[in-house]
Length: 507
Image (cartoon, rainbow, N blue to C red; front, side, top):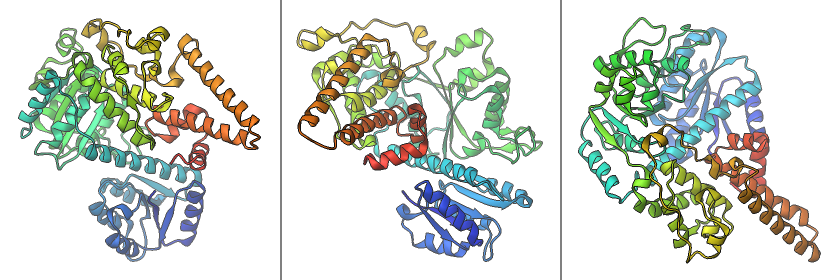
């Protein structure tokens, strides 16, 4: 992990932060002035720069705000935390406008400062993973005729700035299409900003979209730019637009009409140049008839409509997607990729996948962690796929369950729930789950007996490490590598999971 750079002319501040961060296993590098930071940046390779920059505002030889401008020029995605005295809050506002991640008022509470820095580190790592996946992985996969139509449409829209409405069931990959439209458009050099309008509480959504001024409401201690400003010159992806509150639809229509809006609590119009791509799993025409969606906004968004097929409509892609996700899961967990047998693929191709591609991806994460052998057989598939014990014992005679056509309204009205494929979400009362658990316990008991018979004096350590490794890998798979969330699911602290990952060699 790259170090956290601390810049402050006060030696005591640097010392306290260094010691606190080292206790959290976060490496640091300290500077007493901005000149030394700029000199270090000029000689550092792209992979040798800071993970996070924590800088004071007032220092001899150059202010923190000047340093922020110069650092952002070389590392635009680098989170920068500005430290400031309470009398410098106006400077902190300037720092936000310059792209600072957060400000840290002095004198600060040390645990809160460490928590803020750790939050910035997690944000930085998420950005790195996202950029790596975008750069290395194929944008989209699909050989089915329905997907080829989608690819052709993306190609035709490549040099256009027209508004696009993407429809399709939850989990079918609407954001991937939006990213592909951005990447192949004239705006590719600008930012791609995504927001799920259904995931943000109604009271916060207006501020998220349009930003707010300092003092606009309780807790608004600084001015904050909204997603429209953040996406200026690029693309704004509005996911689940059908769930947007009716009163906010009027404000959105105004922005789409003339590109102007007001921050919450603001009195000056802000101009933005953004291409909007919207997506929904709902029938917007029906929403208009029911009075839940503005007809004029619908027509403003529905310039070009792109329908994304459900996974059950492109069964010929299941095999390719499964192998891709197994490779991806293995890479994320640092393990050998698992292979899947033709018999197991037959069962997957016969499954309806109500959660679509997202459900298949989560299933592959589950298999990477839980399948006992390198070759995945039908018996290794989770019980939801419908493989019985007799079928698994005779795969050559087994026939996959017939695909039952599922009405679109039945699928889209229910949330895509891929989580049952993770072990913590499987019902404990499930007979299949209980049976698998018993088999695992018997295997562990047999290994313990064999080790005890061999006279080994490390039985406890060997089996405990294996158990803890499997448990942590399962939790990390279910959270896609997010350690704090995995620790929460396991009921342990973030320091504990970090220490265990290091001790068990799971880095």
